Amino acid sequence: MNRKDIALGLSLAFMVLAISIVISIEGIGPIIPIDIRGLGASYLWNSYNPWNTTLTSFSLNAVTAIIWDYRGLDTFYETAVLFASIVAILMVLRGYIEVKGLGAKGLSDITKTATKIILPLIVTYGFATAIHGQLTPGGGFQGGAIAVVASSLIIAVLSIEYLYGLGISSSKLMLLRVFGFLGIIATSISLAIIGMLIGVNTYIFQNMAKENSLSMPINFLDTTLAGSIFIFNLFEFIIVFSGLTFALMMLTIREKELRNIDTFVEEYE
Amino acid sequence: MTSSIIPYLVIVYTSILSVFISYLVVKERDLLIATLLMLAQGVSYTLIYYLLMAPDLVITYIPVSVGVVPLLLFLLIKRTERFEK
Image (tube, rainbow over all chains, first blue to last red; front, side):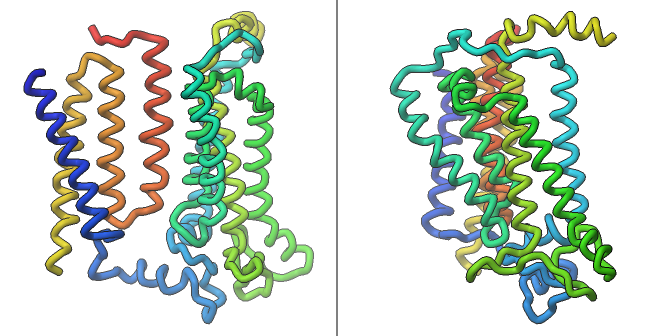
């Protein structure tokens, strides 16, 4: 045991101590800013403000309100970047064929059983994070990233054959991804199209009623739905989950599945 | 304001620790251990995000830094070599 190990062990022990200090003494005690700039104050004031219906988005979580309403177009382009990067992976690996029954084993039985118990919990937690994005911290990307942990656990512990057995293939994931992307586009322009048809001024990415009276659904029973924010989060969850799962599947590709890739590339060239 | 010095101290400590860990990650020859160290670095960043009032980032950063990135690196190490020459 050399000096490096001792230093590393000590510092990690101090990290555990730091985490426990934060949890025990401060509770949920993040550092609260003393002064808020004007921009931040206006977001905080308007993100859930039923008395100012032209500027509010009826979202209790101000961060989600900013991400999907006040700067929705930015987030749309971020989603498009994720979409394009997965397309790039597909371009490199064109000609890939899924082969089932190559006899991948995975880890031991104990690990497999424990993972099978955890999996539904992870997916449920991710989905809940996504659809409660307007109420609590989180949102579509966060929920999708949590749910991707489930598929990465499947690939690492239960092998990719289990994923095929669940009916998740790369072509289905591609379809799901395109469906999510089209859903976001359709949601963002739906009010604009309706406004065009009935002849009032509307905007792209319009959430709540502006000078016109068109608005997305505000409440579901007694919970705020924040209009398009809920729908965007749902579609973003689908995109992130299917896109990142697809990327993971591409990275665990087997050699026999790539047999056709050379001939395919030659044909293309 | 007396008790609120603790989060600042924790932030200072975790940020120094993350720099220390990243030095170890670069120096480590066993790439598997380097990946595990990166995981610890991710946890320390998560604590900083949490204390600086960014719960959205915490929720994204935990699955990405603890779940997805180590898995990708493990897959990469499995395909290539574990020890750096």
